[in-house]
Amino acid sequence: MLKVAVPNKGALSEAAAQMLAEAGYRQRRSSKDLVTIDAENEVEFFYLRPRDIAIYVGEGTLDVGITGRDLLLDSHASAREALSLGFGASTFRFAAPRGTMTAESDLAGQRIATSYAGIVEDHLSRLGIEASVVRLDGAVESSVRLGVADAIADVVETGSTLRQADLEVFGDPILSSEAVLITRDGEEPQGYEVLRRRIDSVLVARTYVMMDYDIRVENVEEAVRLTPGIESPTVSPLHREGWVAVRSMVPRDAAQKIMDGLYGLGARGILVTDILACRV
Image (tube, rainbow, N blue to C red):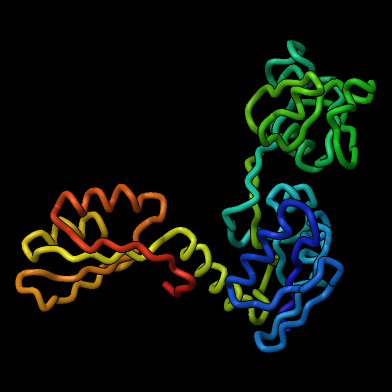
């Protein structure tokens, strides 16, 4: 069986389980379950701390995992990112007390508190900056006030937590992270290709919608330029003379604008429906 690691809690857990369910895999019924066996699909799911997943995959104990890009890079595990999953986006940045630092060069000789020591040490090394990295678990915003550090490096979403601690971000982002599918270096495990193909189909289904519309024959070419589809739209004759029906996949985010354009070309009966699953 293919052995897959899934986050057991935190920001990635629910979204990862939802994606796997949409891909047709059985998921755990209770948050207390540590293992779920999907015998029909020959997959075994293990629910683990997101920070540990890259280690298990890198060591070959498990075949595939879902975790954050930041956690993968921080672990220095022998695992690789195979596919970005489109959820769990975050930005990793430096922050310091207001007015004290404006550029990464200001970190030279300073103490930096973080829960991601591996990422920070690698980043400082690339910049040629020598600083002391203080590894902390959990929230690091209080470390400056408590005298443990001069600056911090952490995930920043809205920045409200930093403002409460009287900290401000500076310098360029260290890393842009999101949920990723990972596997170990080397030969792909048996069953991996099917899992990846299914997850790919979920990503496409979430990104696109199906659009159907009727339009006069003389306007078809102009209309299909708005709806080219992934490969090519389906065009079928209608009983109404001089009209055809067109079906095409279009980007979800652009659907309303495309509908406006089609209506302006004389298209009617424009329908948009969700795609539950697909193979492209």
